[in-house]
Length: 129
Image 1 (tube, rainbow, N blue to C red):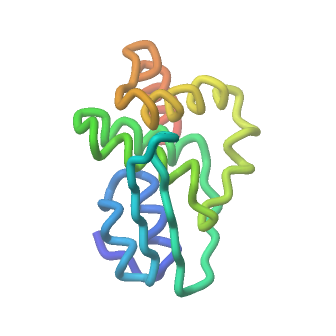
Image 2: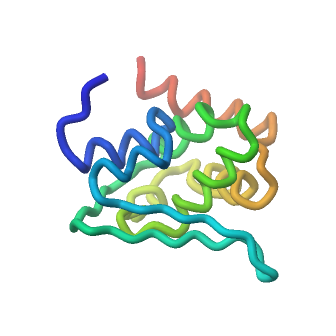
């Protein structure tokens, strides 16, 4: 798929369609380090961009990355840390609590529970029908 602007690239990363490193194409650097306080995500942007995301976007990302623990953890920590992402719409969805819990578990446990996968699939399927 062709991404025409920085917003589309950020959204593709959120949806798990592109790896975090692809953000460098639009001047966004993501460095994740381990410390005694846990994992730290440092996001630096040379350009102004803020992308509104939805529960569907997070659901797609969780489903796409669920088989790679390391990539899933880094992606989820980025979602929580990045000021290039606006999650306001996420909180408006009826299933937001389940999705945000799945995102938290992905960031700190590196896995997505079976029950959450079923809900995530339902969310994505509702959009595609």
